[in-house]
Structures are given as structure tokens and as C-alpha cells.
Image (cartoon, rainbow, N blue to C red):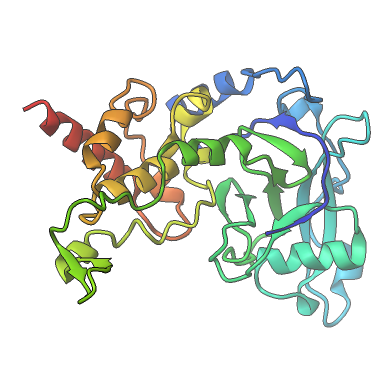
Length: 314
């Protein structure tokens, strides 16, 4: 994925549309949790009082927006430059929607090309396949390329993924997320000494592992995950325990390999996840399923892992 901009990182915390009083209180508590990184420059956690905004006092259409053919919409975007000593800010950009595509990513590209070339964000495929443009848009974690600009509102708020270190502007640091993904060993593990359920050529070469249609159907709803981290960064348990809890995205990928009948390390994978923090920090809040831009169900996959672990003790 192409990264537009760069620099060191800082901590950003953001409430992801927690509607209940419990989640709102939890978010306020999580905002003040900062894990220091001695080797990097880390800014203070996000607090609304720390931000400056260039937004007009009223976000109603300005007089110039009444010109025929113009439909002005304001985009309030989180800004932080590691090369400057100032605190994070929210910059407001007016966009004529008559001259802009329908997606939030279209607006971001237009802002970078025409208004502020220093704006940093990730993007690549524009098709909801790569997961690069994951960010928080109007309080919901989603993909900018799949998020339509709401024509009924005067403004759209865009922030980086919440409770992640930020490299610059909308570019979140995914280092910890991918390190956790690596720990589940996300590849097919086979014992080549066994020959059961194998298709073997005449010369003895193993061509592939047998995998019938029903066994393949089990993987539907898991293999489509694009590792955008929208689900993990919407999970309060991941906010509080991101160093030890693997999070919904990684756990769903872990179950993808546990459920694969071709894999021969199922027992080892289950044993590795039988941990009070790696797996059982999940409290079935289900923010992950609600926010997934691919309409997947990480919560169900996590429940099935817990079921498999329980069955291993019977």
C-alpha cells in the first residue's frame, strides 16, 4: 500500500461511537492510558481540549456556497506533523461536491491534490480489497474507499484508527497489529510424512490436499478478511490490552486455520490460544462485527475458538 506522508509516531485515542453509557465511560478511562515508547517521540493522548480547529463558527453553507453549481461540504480532518512541536489539530477543508467523487477517499485525494499536499493517508486499491485506507469516519471505523459521503450533513469528521500510535495525520502505525498476526503462523501447516487425504501423482509427488466442498464452505466469512484492523481498533478490550490481547481480526484469522481441514497443526494452534489474555479478554461486546466494512463476523469466530478449547478438555 502507498503511504502518502511519513514520520515518527504518537498516541491517539478516540471514542468510536460508543452509544451506551458504559462504553462512553470505558472510553474516557482508556483515553488516559499511554504506553511510553522510549525510542520514539510520543505526543499526549487525544483530548478534545488539546485540539485547535480551523472550522468556521457555523458549519452551515457559507455565502459563496450559494453560487449556482456549488454544493460545499466541510471535511474536518485530524492533523499531526511529527516534524512540528505543536499539538494535534483538526483542519477543515471545504469541498465542492459537484466536482468530487462520491466516496470519502475521493474527497481526501482531492484535498491532497488541490488544497493541501502535506496531508498524509494510506490508499491503494480503491476497491475495498487492500484495507489500506482504514480510518475513523464520523465515529465509525471503516474504509474510506467504501464510505459514501453523506449528502445530508454539512460536515464529515475523519480521524485515524482509534487507540493506535499515529505516524502522521491519518496514517496509523500497524506494527503491533502485524506482529500479533505473525504469532498465529497464518499459513497451511502439513505433515508431509502422512499420505491420508492426499492426491498423489504416479511418480509419488503430492499434488494437493483433499478439500471437499463442505469443508471449503466452512472458510466462508473468514478468508475474506483484509486485515484493515477496523474491528480490532473498535474493540474496548483491545484498547485496554493491545499488548497481550490478539484482537478480533487476528483471532478470526487464527480460527480460519483451525477450521481448515487441510491443516495438521490444529491441536498446537488451539493450545497456543488457550490463554487468559490472548483470547479470553474478549467480552462479546460485538463492536467488531458491527463495524466490519466487509460484513464479516469476528465475534462468531472467537466464540467458536472458545468452544473448541472447551471441547479439548472433555
